[in-house]
Amino acid sequence: MNQAWFRGLVAVALVLGICFRFVNIDRKVYWHDEVYTSLRISGYKGENVVEQVFDGRVIRPQDLLKYQRISPEKNLADAMDALKKHPEHPPLYYIIARFWSQFWGQFGGSSVAGIRSLSAWISLLVFPSVYWLCWELFAEPLVGWIAIALIAICPLYVLYAQEAREYSLWLLTILLSGAALLRAMRLDSKRAWFLYFLTLVVSLYTSLFSTLVATAYSVWVLASEGFRWTRRVTTFAIASLLAVLAFVPWVLVIFGNLSRMLVQTNWITVPRSLWYLIGSWELNISYIFIDFDASINIILVPRIIVGLLIGISYTIYYLWRKESKRAAWFVIALIAIPALALILPDLILGGRRSTVARYFFPCYLGIQLAVAYLLADRISISRFSLGNRRNTWAPAVLGVLISAGVLSCGISSQADTWWHKVARYRNPQAARIINQTPRPLVISDNWDVNFGNLISISYLLEDKVRLQLVDRPQLPEIASGFSDIFLFAPSPDLLLDIEKKPSLKIEPLPEVNFPIGRLKSMDGEF
Image 1 (tube, one colour):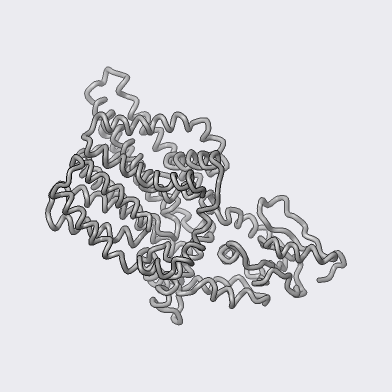
Image 2 (tube, rainbow, N blue to C red):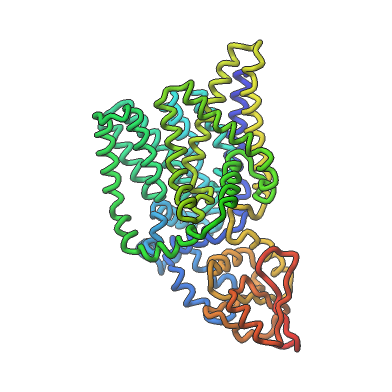
């Protein structure tokens, strides 16, 4: 590969990757999970808000959205109190997000673009971090540049770079702690080990899944030392133990709210069939390189998954055969330990932990490191064997991967929703139908994830829309003066209550693949 052509390709991938992280950053629906980000950093607890708005009164969308904004009546202590009620999410990202939102508030309020831009800016730090990690692992600049190109246009990372959630920060801390560990093992100095301790603490306070990454690092340290207890292993154990001790304050918060946490995360234990799990794993792996939304990837992936899995397996085998076992063990541990920790409980106990793509960030990073090494090594060989066509496939593969990523990110950037907006993917479509009517009223009740979804759709509703929300699954006394009455994701009990009223019927909206319908009165009156 011509060196100038290669540099140009990497530069284009990097520039486009940066652009994709910011273009149309506020276009996609501000969904359920992001709603809870804004709710918590603003110092509100969900149950308190429910008491104030799910009381049968007719309210405006803005009456819900006010709980998404930081106000003088709620300080940092209130935000921390709200965060402690959800200990499954460590507080670091959310504390930063609160200060970030306060900063943006000086320039016109806490907009969707403002809060999401924090993740986008954090994601830019991933580029120098992955280069540092690759340099420590392979000592070859070419691997680092290819890794930057692959990560820059990785559809999955771009999606979460536009999310008001902690996952871009988590990816950054995985890279920094990994690079710091490699450096500490190389230099074996107090300063280097302190840096590893510091980055591991930051990672733990970003995501509980960092414990899986720390476990992977432990396996790698033992493997790189020949599974012997050496001085480096001792120093690593001390640094890791100190990091765990630094995390104890949040561990105490977890134990103090353990029953609440188990209820809030109970959804991951819902059983899924083996075929469902396998299909999810295939889809999630494909999102590293290509993403045309789940509806298209479901059709596309079965046609390419065998080749994709063979290719990934070959990159790991190639790394094991060509590079030092030290580097190979690092990549394998980063892939295998978190993956097994998520997959085995689903297979043995039942559940769907392993279907959540964002939990596999360490595994995907390991795969990308292996791919970057393979391509870099073959491109280096092709420079010295211009007459041998067998060594010219790597530049073509790199070009295809970058093209697939750019195309995926380009399509996604124009959409108002995407597959990762699980609850609710169809909110934009439902909002358009509601907004088309002259005087709409939306009725709903508090069940399942409705609270977050109602705030989510409120971002999309026009000022003319009114909402009537109830905490109990009983139809409220419907106010007059509305042209259309919509039922938004009603609970089974609310539907049962409506069925008991012979004068009412629910008219489905076949154009929307979503639990919303029009409520009609047979006698023309409510």
